Each structure stands twice: as structure tokens, then as C-alpha cells.
Image (tube, rainbow, N blue to C red; front, top):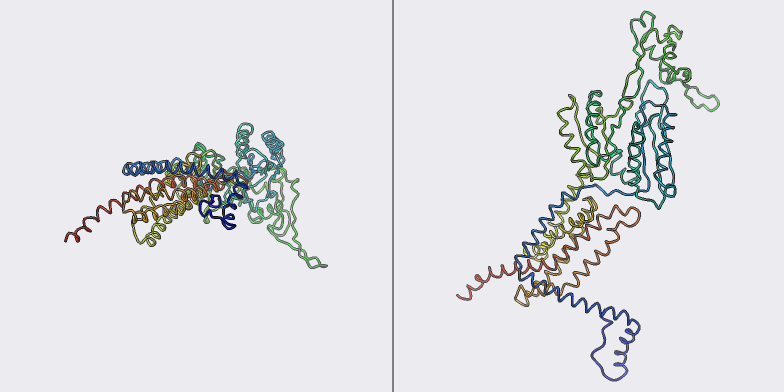
Length: 585
């Protein structure tokens, strides 16, 4: 900005002198309005700097009180950390959501479709037409027909449906629609189970493939006892504030037909249990399950599987199943199924999940209206208190996003601590002293206090981006303190007075310190506001940096010079007698 200053010297005569005086004048005529703004800013800044000098002088004269006040403020600020809450990453409004609904177990797919149509109509009532882009329904996928040889191990059956809802580019917050739909489902469809799986790729990755951030595993071989225990625990988890969509993922009441072969009757009729089972499987599931056959096309020599089975519409009742013919070893019809077996109904587990080769039941829970860390802490208390009620030989385990979050937080906390230690050790090597680096890093606790207060005021939880912002803030805060302490050391060598050196260091270094901090703060404002698509993801980082730099800059300009003066004054007083003894001798 020096090109705006008027020429004051060398007012000689001649063309050379005329060129020196005319050039600034032409510039001021061209940029007169900008020059006026600049001069006004300089006047205001000089007034501000003089006021800062007076305030700094007051702090230096009351150094001990200032240190006690700042240290107490930083300590009290750390007490706010438990009230911030913890999330792995902030929730992102992806402009879409996925609703999974589960009807009564065993419901025919036609009935499921009718219920899904009603739910879809309700969704269209909740979401305005100008904000709704489209709805896609998937019913009973994957779904196999009547099959006695294996069970469908997926989470879908004829009673399950996925409803994918995409919103328009300009829409209200997705969470608002989800909350309303959740309330309407609870009120209008009380018999329907439902939950909202993660719809965006970020949440799916953070969950590591799980359909919810919290997963309570009940592991053990006694499935019936584990199911009863899981249902009781699920009811307790539903009363935890912030826990929503709590459910047991694996259905426990799927209808099953039990065919109990009377071996004595079968033996009297010349049949074995293997022959009875093969006949039933062949009729219901096809001959491919019991006797695989292939046909080779003589034209192209391609193998084709041959599967023969009874038409499903021929076996539409228990009486039709009882009249199923049983073939003997020679392929001749000997008896019907009802003469050699009893057929009954019972509930069963249609899905057999395993974890580390052991049977497992999963209680999943989403989080809404509360931070993940607080909900997980309450759930963990329930898990710990339920240990005594576990069936013999079973174990219970809480996993999911919370475990990954805790591991990441430990790493970031250690990274924050190591960054401060490494910065201190590097400055020790640079300054060849232990004292100057200590004076410099006294601004860092104030930076941490600023981060805590900014997150608390903006209702932002602790998360991985927020902790990354805290680590970033440490570097800028340290650099500003280095400017002040280095200049204060130079002034102390020249003036021989720690008070005047500290006062002069703050006064002279005010502009560069403010420029460095303001450049970073202003640059982080758009990020802190969460502007743009997916901006919520990085907003905690910007807020942490802004809050930390505001408080760190204030500490650099007031607290660091105060600590410098006290430390240098105490060292001078402690070294003065020893330095005076040789002179007296």
C-alpha cells in the first residue's frame, strides 16, 4: 500500500523531480476514492492500536490476576466438553431416504403390495408434489417359492418391502420428512414394522455395511432363549432417548410346517425317511434338489438343467400336502404322505445369521434428535445391566459405528496431543531454550477453549472434522505466538526491560497477527456456514478453526506478552545476584 503515500522529499526542479511528484498524484486522482478509504482505515487502525496498547499495558501491570483469570477460564471451558455430544461424522442431507417396511411374517406378496400402496400414498401426502422427484418400491426381493431344502438368508421375504424416495433439488430438510413419516407410520400402521436404513453412501460406509449405527449382538446356540432375551432387551432400548427404529433384524415368528415321519409306519409300508423326504422335496422344490439331471443339446452340446416339480397351485392346502404321493425305491407309488407322517404348524427363524461361526440375533437401532455418543452410552448401560439375564452359554456385544467412532476419537486426541508436543520440541531446537517455547504454547489452551465454546454456541457435536479443525488451529496459533515472542526477545535485548519489550512486541506485531488470523477466519466462514451440497460434513471443521483462532489470537495479543514479562522478570531477578558476585569480588 506504500504507492498511495504522497511524495514528501526531493522537491527539486527539473524533469526528474517533476516525474517523482506527478506519478503519485496521478494515482490518487485515479484511485482517489480508494485512497480515501485507505487513509480512513489507517486512522481507525491507529486509534485501535493505541487502545490495544493501553489495554495491554493494563494487563501487564496486573499480570498475576490476568494469568489466574485466563487459566481459570480455560479450565472452566473444558468442563463444557461432556455437554457437546459426540458423533462420528455430521449427518448429510442426501436428498433421498430409504424406508424398509415389514408386514406380518408370512404375509402373501399381494397383501404386502396393497399395504405398500397405502404407505406410498401417505408419503405423497407428507411430501409436497413440487419437492418429490420419485418413489420406487421393491417388494419381496429376493424371494424364493415353496422350498423345504433351504431357507432364504436375505432380509427380504414376501412380507418385506423397500421404498426408495428421491427428493427434488429444492426441498425441505430430509430429516423433517423422515420424522413426520415415522410419526404417521406409528399412528396409521401400528402393526407394520419399519425402519430407515442409511440412504447416502457416506452413512453406508461409516456403518461398514450395517443397516444402523448401533448393533447389539446376542450370540449363542440357544436360539429360542436368545430370542426371548433379545425381545426383552429391545423393549428396554426403545425407551432410550434418541433411539429410534429399534428392531430385531431376524424374524423369529415365520410360519413353518413340520412334517414328522412315523418311522414305524414307514417301515411297515417298506419306506424309509430318506424316501419320504426325497418325495416331498422333489414335489415342492423340484427334482434338481434331490436328483440333478442334465440334458445335452446335440446341436450345440450345451448342458441344460432339468427340474421337474408339482405345480404350486396343485398344493394349496394342508389336505393337498397330505395327499402327496410317496415313491418307493423302485419308483412306484406306495402311499400318501398323510399315512406315514404328521403335519403341524410352528414358528421358526427364516434367517440364520452367524458371527464368527456362532448363531447371532441382531438388535439394530438408529439415532435421531440426540448425539450418537450419548445414545450409545445409555444403551451400553442397558447391555451391562442385562448380562445377568443372558441365557447360559450366550454372550452380548455392542458394536457398529460407535466402536469405530471411539477408535477414531482416541487416535485424533492422541494426534492433537502429539502435535502440541512435537511443535514444542521443534521450537526448543530452534530457540535453543526450554522457556521461549513454553511461553509460545501458552496460547494453545485458549485455542482449545475457543473451539469448545464455538461448538457449544453453534450446537455442534464433537466429530472427526471438528477434531481435525482443532489440530489445524494449533499450527496457526503457534505461528502467531512465535511472531510476538521473537520480537519481544529482540526488544528485551535492546531495551533491557521485559515490561517495555512485551508492550512493544504486542504493539508492533498487532497488524501481522491480526492479518494472519483474519485471513484464516474469513476463509473458513463459508465452510462453517455449511453452504453447498454436503456442506454439513465440513462445517464442524470450519467452526472449530474459527473459534480456536479467535480465542488464540486474543491470547497471543494479551496473555502471551503477560507470561513473557513474568517469566523474563523472574529469571532476571533469579540470575542477578549470581551475576553480581564476580563483580563484587
